[in-house]
Image 1 (cartoon, rainbow over the protein chains, first blue to last red):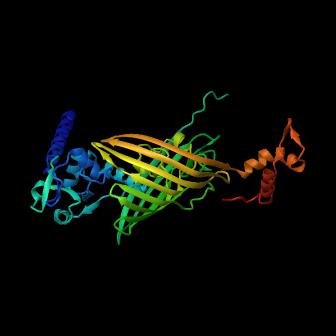
Image 2 (image 1 turned 135 degrees about the vertical axis):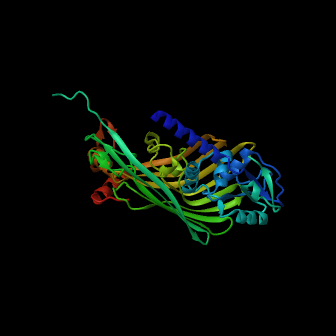
Image 3 (image 1 turned 135 degrees about the horizontal axis):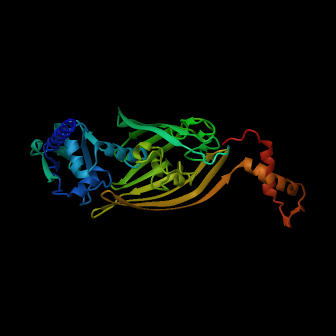
Length: 142
Length: 276
């Protein structure tokens, strides 16, 4: 009887984790004025991990992060950089404390992100699909 | 009764953390630390992570020791201009003199020449091996400690005074880090000795595709080890007769060397408290 209880609990936990994973889709965006029209997953991941600092066309790129408590942050990194919050923190620790690179700037909200991006075509960010407005364009959908 | 088997147990308890604080004016203060307690049941020797820079460990000195792994670091970054930033990092850990006096591991100015090309000048950690430039960051490693068989090989891996370039081009899906460097260093080791590395010139090349990294590295330097205690105890018995008599031979070899004799004479004048 106890065994069945455990299996039931396990199933509920699994179900909960699946529902959590089906959160709102995120999209990768740049300013509507940017000459960049599309990127692939590897290119976006490279930019957000500081492995490269340029768009493929050679122009300078500046990634903007969301705060790590947001669902968008979790969703983006799970599907694009394929890193958990802990892995990401460990990755940036080694980049920062070796003096190789500094961690990306963070936007505190969707509104701040849109404001930053619309005024600077070098910036690239990610956001919940429903929050996208005319000041930005979608260049990648994970 | 004769002991047929001596069991040596080595265990470690490690906790590592990293934090950041925004100070405003484009300055941030960041820190990291590891508290590590190592237990070794052997009484014959000390377990240390680096025999050249750690005089005490767990084992014969004490069975439980904080020395081999515990360390704390503070780093300040200041972005002075769009292209110019400054970074300084001090780390407190057991040093060659068995104290925890913080040492400046990093102190450089970084200038962004192009969007994918940086130049750094000042005190830099040379990237000899894959983890060399973040060796104190246990938090960023998958192991309890970086493999000490490799990382204690080069005693001068801590820092150098010099300059490096970091070039990060992208070819298709592969991102590169091409990092040539040049510098000089002097590092104190146990007991009261020192290594100097002069005209260190090297290059570190990383090719990165997704989670895969291919790395190649080359370093060339002139390395000197200076150990007055060793010279005194080993060379003095053989060399001092030669210094007193230029015609003295040892197994047929004339050992008279005026420069070395002068050095030995200097050592005996300042023998007891030799520090770097």
